[in-house]
Length: 40
Image 1 (cartoon, helix red, strand yellow):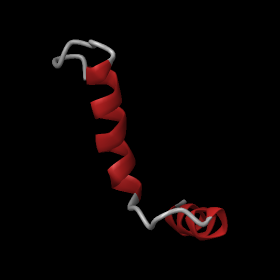
Image 2 (cartoon, one colour; image 1 turned 135 degrees about the vertical axis):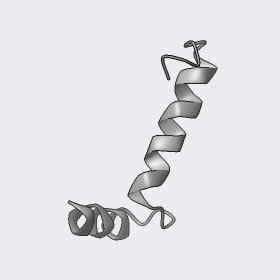
Image 3 (cartoon, one colour; image 1 turned 180 degrees about the vertical axis):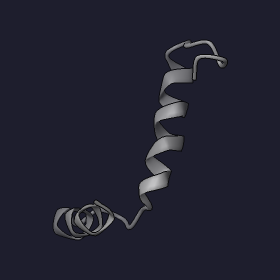
């Protein structure tokens, strides 16, 4: 999965990120939508 993710990032031409970074991004998004921190 990681290899496919990295290949997709390169093909998309977006800045290099780690798969784990998506977890933090999603948590930040949920908190911005007023989800309770215990749920996030």
